[in-house]
Amino acid sequence: MNLLFELNHSLIGFFLLILLSCAPPPQSTPQSSCEWCGAQDAPAELTCCITIPPADEPGEPLHIEGRVFLPDGITPAQGILLYVYHTNQEGIYPKRGNETGNGRRHGYLRGWMRTDANGHYAFRTIKPAPYPSHNEPAHIHLTIAGPDRAEDWMDSYVFEGDPLMRDKDRVLHRSGGDVPELVLVKDADGVWQGKRDIVLKE
Ligand SMILES: [Fe+2]
Image 1: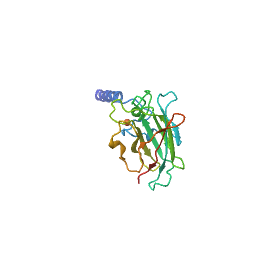
Image 2: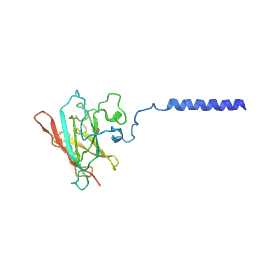
Image 3: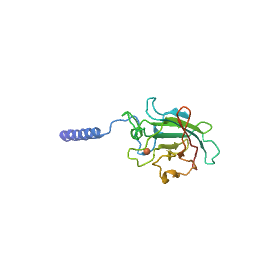
Image 4: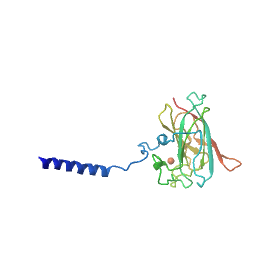
C-alpha cells in the first residue's frame, strides 16, 4: 500500500514537472489573440497629443491631428482612446526585443492618445514607408476604444499621391464618415502636416 502511495506521488510529481517545463515563461502583459488590438497595452495616463518615435528615429517628420465626434457628427467625443502603429522608413515594424503585449507584433513605433474636451487628438511621428514587398501603400494603423466602446479598428491612414495606392485604398471600408486618405502639406519647418476628423459609429 505504501509503495502504491509513493508511486502515485512520484507519478504526480513527474507530470507536474512536465507541465511546468512546458508552460510559457511569465510575461508582463499578455499578447492578445487580437492581432490589431492595442488598447490593452495603453499606459494608465494618456494625453491628447503625443510624440511617438525616439528623437534619433530616421525619417521625415510627420504630424497628424484631428477631432473625434459622436455619431451626430457635431458633438466632440471626449475621452476616446486612439491607438496607432506603423512601419519605419524601411517599411518594417521595428522591434527592440523588449516589447510587451502586442508591441511584439506592432513594434515600438506605436502610441496612445485620449481625446480632450474638444475631441482633439494629435501625434507626431515619422512618415512610414510601404512594406518592402510594395504590396500595399504606406499606412498607419488606427484603432479606437472606450470609455463605453469596445476597441474597434478603423481604416488606416493612407497618403494622397502614394504610387501604391489602389482604388480600394481610397474608399472607406468602415462607416463613420472619416476620410483615411491624407493630403500632406510640408510646413516651413519641413514637417509633413495631415488632418483627419473621425465620426464614431452608432
Ligand atoms: Fe500594416
